[in-house]
Amino acid sequence: MSRMSRTLLLLAALLSSPLAATAGDDVEQGLATLWEVLWHQSGTPTRVVRWENEIRVRFSGLGVAAHREHSLGALRAVTQEAGVKLVDVTDHAPQTANLSVEFTSDSALDDNQPCATSLDFRTETRIDSATVQMRGRDAWRCAYHEAMHVMGVRGHPAGKTVLSYFPWKVDALMPLDKVMLRAWYSPAMRGGMTPFEALPVLADELVATQPDKALASQARDRFFATTVEQMQAYANGTGDVPVIVKRSGKSTEEGIRYGRTEMSYFLGVAYQEGVTVRADPNQAIRWYELAASAGNRRAQARLGSFR
Image (cartoon, rainbow, N blue to C red; front, side, top):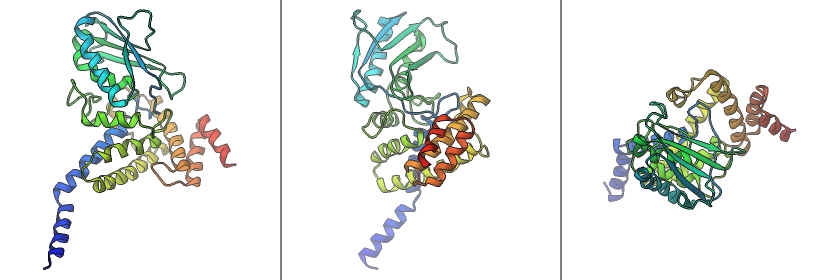
């Protein structure tokens, strides 16, 4: 057997080995986590919202001296990864803050939600301001989780991220968190993007971190195909509710109905613009019509472009 033949056989063995399969599985699990951050805990898919200006934070409440530095460190970590300027105006009263972080008493919030972030935006594109509340005794484990939410990443996915309800780490960002932030604030992303528009940007950032980019790209393409198929069934009302919806524990029947309608519209956008799937005007019209029949005004407006 020639040296070239032996080399080709070795490569084939490596590609079909459990190690290669595991690497592909890891990428698909990462992609599943990135997809799930595009879902709100109420069980509805969301659009991308993000800061378009600097963040000016003011800390207040009980035990500011004890919790400020750690919470500020979390905010610095996420803003540095995203490339957003952060200014602490706590000690500068005349300056207006657009981010308020309040440390509350240990009895002020529910035990099942000891910290919470509220994002304010006039349209679902740009964050105008935000408010964070954290119980004093939970500030240490909440800081990085809520800092991610502050940046507009609203989901609670499973996987290796500080956003998980059962996080692997609470005192620093994990690699997937950094991938999310870099993609979320990359030039390729923009406020108001639908999940199918945002997913390729997130996926490309993840693929770029992988040692075997060809294998990662194959995993990405498989994930896209599977996800679109699942979401088509979901939007049609024939598929099962996505796992992220079940796991949130806060979804409602009304939220799921709304989610199906939104997903129909998002699928229409995907097929019209050729994002995550190949462009197909007929499919776009089909999904817009389904969403429009349920009262989705954006779908009704989009249908006008085909006439």
